[in-house]
Image 1 (cartoon, one colour):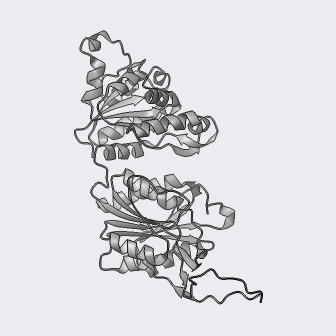
Image 2 (image 1 turned 90 degrees about the horizontal axis):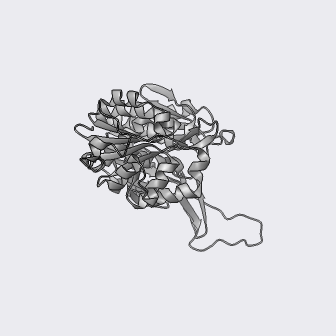
Image 3 (image 1 turned 30 degrees about the vertical axis):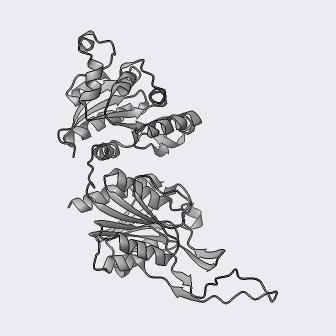
Length: 398
């Protein structure tokens, strides 16, 4: 995936610096070469000896290295690479980048480069959520700096939340995308997300509960692996990801039409919570109470089964993934649904109120396939998305 590519890896000073060692190994395994740069703080967490041994390259630490600087080494370093990667990107490094400071080798390289830059932020949850950090990140993204992560989880300091550096495998995937590659490069993946709203009258509707968070995260994860993503979304609470083709719909009929128009695709991930029924006698005017105490008679009609239509259609994608939100007998119901719909996989979860999953930031899913049921531990929805995206990439690579 990275054959012949040269990565300038800037290792920042945080506890996540130990993951840089695995990152070096994975980049090399993918065919890339690593030139490491160690900040002074990073050397407190990982040694130049271990970094250099794994990278099989000189470790650069000092801006004022007489041998290198006689040849303007910092300029050459910053421009001879195909991509600059900062992992971990600490709050301090992000602040330096956003303000254009260049008081050490790492920050000077980042300011002098004419290549793309990818950062993998890692810091305490409070530092990550601080307005200054978010402001700096906004500046960097506006400058075209790419980001991967951070993940949500338990911190070394004992706190929990966003701020964990993305896993090395995720960073390698992001490197591939940044360099125009990635395991899903050249693939088209269709993703549906969010609820559908079926009107009762112009101001009322029926719908399934769905924030669209999981579908949005899946679309972003597939994009990060290099896929061209068509994102068909109902009126979700979560905004759609950038870098994908967004098709906004409201009703199940509109979603079905948008899905059909988006085909063909290599894979389809049908994460939308599509309403099973619509109001057949929906009113064109707002329904009024007449004082009788009687509710209006609503007639329901069954909506088109989008998942079954895609799974059994003439333009069926190679891989079709459905979703099943259940409250009882999750595996049994999801297994039956997979057989009934004709899809390849079902991602099932228990959305009983006690789980806190509906509308929450975490998910606990079971992947139902021809091989059986594979239970995943509870994790952030972004992590579920990345894990699923990697499995999709593996399936399409076979």
